[in-house]
Length: 114
Ligand SMILES: [Cu+2]
Image 1: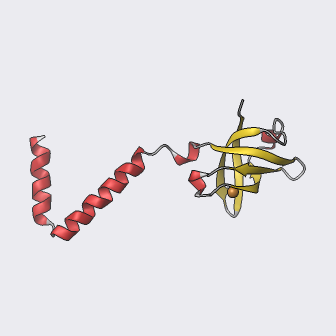
Image 2: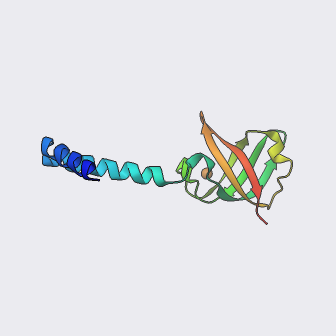
Image 3: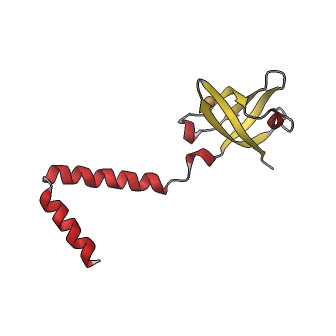
């Protein structure tokens, strides 16, 4: 504890006040980023509007998708695995994970909501 405090004082003394402030801001935003849950595993709310097994596409009316920075909308997704469509029915309420690959949005996981 005593050592850490000494280190902070030395660092501040060596840095211009404005620069020190900016460093502090960077550190705090970095810390809050770390605290957030892993974006890749985040599930979004959705309702299946259409299933196209031939094209391996699914239309979902979805809530916000945080890892894609996407607001709620209805849109077509591709699926990572065609098996994901086996249990999917129009009207199903689901939680799902999606990722962006190239120009395409791909559903990687679908869970029915009971
Ligand atoms: Cu969307």
